[in-house]
Length: 311
Image (tube, rainbow, N blue to C red; front, side, top):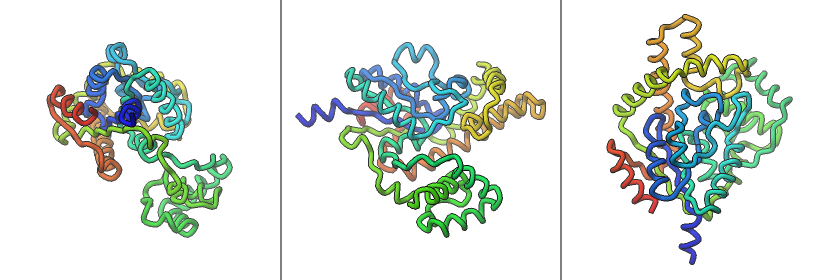
């Protein structure tokens, strides 16, 4: 009986670096397993970027039901906590309809919220947040980090001084809650402890990945991602919002201003994408040690390997 319950609550997590072929594999898996796809990519949630974020196209979404793609305005701040809340709804809905949820993407933090949970840190008010941001600007990264370590010794050696986002977050949490960010993390557990979770990471060789990245950049330019950026610019959204960080936005804007050629624009997009893929692989080595690392150039063989893991 317990086996039946377990099988009825199966979730497949499918991660990998950008351009590694996650979406194609997810669709093949969904067809075989009567599954549906839930997005775990922090840029593919935005409505405004279909081409530049490499969202699955209409031919894919017609074959298999896709969730959480293009559902959030780029004008909005969208946290990992909000993503988890929405993903849980979609996963529950899939399971109720006897569908296998296949969570697919490249945002490691999103996967962590499923496998490890997310800390219930109280919302930090804007006044405290701005106070910390202003202090960071005034002191600079090195001095601010020293201030943080004095305020919260538990952060020493656990956050890089260069990780501006996390050092500011740690400071504001300690300042507001009187508890270390790591104390909050210690009391965190996954909401999916009674689920059968199957974890796959596409471990593509570097040379092959570089070819795929270049090919995808060419395709995005052909598919008029430049027009996406022109439309996005008209929204005049705050520079601090994460949609601005999407690879290609800055580079295409530099091309539109005439400061770089189209070829230079493509090369800069390729360089940034390669750097991002490297960070994703580094994250996987640190946070996804117990995941099944799979790869084959042949999609049918990769599908067979994946089906062995999830069955």
